[in-house]
Image (cartoon, rainbow, N blue to C red; front, side, top):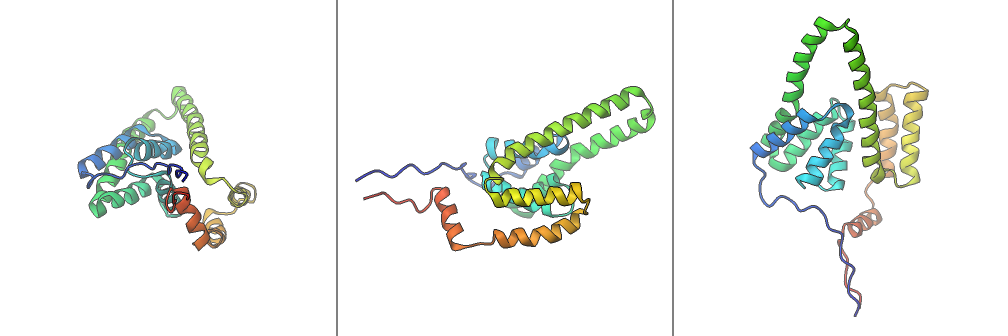
Length: 209
């Protein structure tokens, strides 16, 4: 009798309810140390790798929901993850932690910018910040895209989105209304897909005779 191959290991779920204080402090740190589009990378490192509150698929599901809703991805993610961990109060703690640092910093920087916006140093700093933001977005695309862009259909949807927005300059709501239903239909639940996904996560693996 041959032995079954070991199932892939997934991040361990929290042993018990995550304290609201820990949720708040975790998102406070993310909100205080992440910049621009790179916040998604910080969220992934903290929630998946460090805290192990989510696995990769759960993180991607939350990210996909966040991107299809109005508002900032980071704040949407904080509400979704906080609710998953501790319900409505978890959402409140995560949301406050995520938004307080940025709100305080933007208030201070807004006052400083209004006073010194014509200074050459300020213009140079903004150019540097823009370049760093592009690098952060590229990093997030590589980290998240490796798992999302595995099939021709995935690449086709991405290519269609880029063409509609960047080339034909179609507004984002219209793109979502057109491509959203198509993507939902393509990736609709199907018994065969569910079975393959369960096998991918180590379920339904039986020892061979």
